[in-house]
Image 1 (cartoon, rainbow, N blue to C red):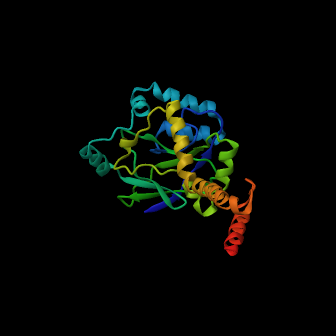
Image 2: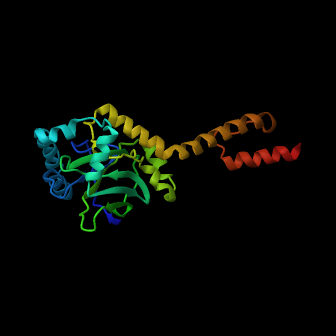
Image 3: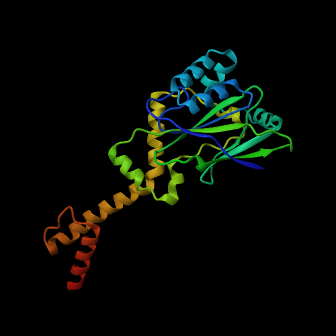
Length: 256
């Protein structure tokens, strides 16, 4: 097994032809893939116009069009296994040590593919991402993998919640992809606006679930404590902190 840090790019603004807003996209391809080379060059130069043009041009190529527009329908198991046996290598893509994608590999007929994963926003570093290549033969060459992040558009409240995510739980910012037996089973569909919204919403929910639970529990604790103590201690300000409410509760219990 060979582990490599993968090239990482972050883009902003409107959705591109490559990936929707609110996703981390893993791009995979053979080193000989012209489209992969064009995509990586455009990302390195920050030229989103050239990036969009490369994907649009690829859609017009009969060999590529089906790969970019086809949905991610699963292959029959026998065909997937046939692809897997033919592949000289496969890889797992990891984020902060956690596996995002398993068993991905290109084939001679599918030399470029994308995988979308919901992304809730928050800091990402190039060193966060690695590809673990499993080579069937000692002289096999690992294929190319790169990662592109396009942060979602968040409200001020949502950004505040993202900032509350503990540093040791940053891996929750990205929802992992499905485990796949073969790359062709996961060819990316053209993303609609509805899917973009669903991806961003799902990412936010997954990444911030425990933070929201904490907030809701805090609100619930304040309200229940206020109701229970108001008759005994008089009016308690809605702005009272949890610490103040706990102290008031202890005072009330001490008087019993």
